[in-house]
Image 1 (cartoon, rainbow, N blue to C red):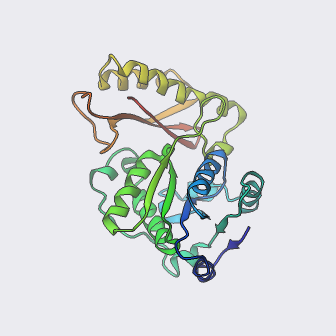
Image 2 (tube, rainbow, N blue to C red):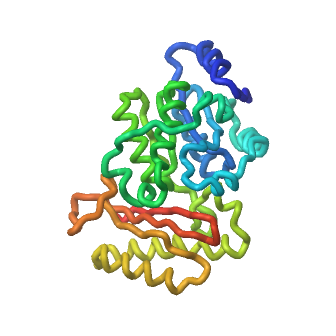
Length: 282
């Protein structure tokens, strides 16, 4: 499994590939789990070559302590890829200096209303950081398709907007959320949870599923109030936000329509560990 740390070496490798071969890319921040592996397997199935980037991007963290605590497990990530993926893949694991040179800072983007809700409200500058690294990686690797999990659904919509704004010739593929046995959405942050909190965090998905059931007969404000009350009664988890929006533009709405898709989004703290999830309501 070739592992590249330098952009020049990665470009040389790509230049030797057969013309016309398709490239699939799975951008990650490492601490890989089976959710990431599901993206890699889909990329394998649909392309001649697959590249997995492993890079903890400093510019998308608005909290320096969160960046410091984010797991960095390159050796374990490579071992997981080798163990679970039968075909050869390319791993790109650069340093921050390699990606950003002497200036580790974000570009500024206008993602419109997509960036002004939910994660954009609570994580100042986050999506500029996401856009910066994704743009750099897509321009560097020139994949035909890039794969992202729907757990970060707002990020997925932002990346689709980024590709449109920058006219990057790549197809962005959203992939279903992979969950642990208790329903908790798989996340690199889950590894920081104690066994007790990991069990308690199943409450998040359980609440989302009930909210989906209620959406058939109840209004969005009613469900938002109900979810808020459920978390007020839970002493282990602190609700940061719960929103119900149009699934495409991520904006709130006044009345439901049969011709629209809707989605519920949630962010919760378990101690100092921030967990996000979402569910389709249709």
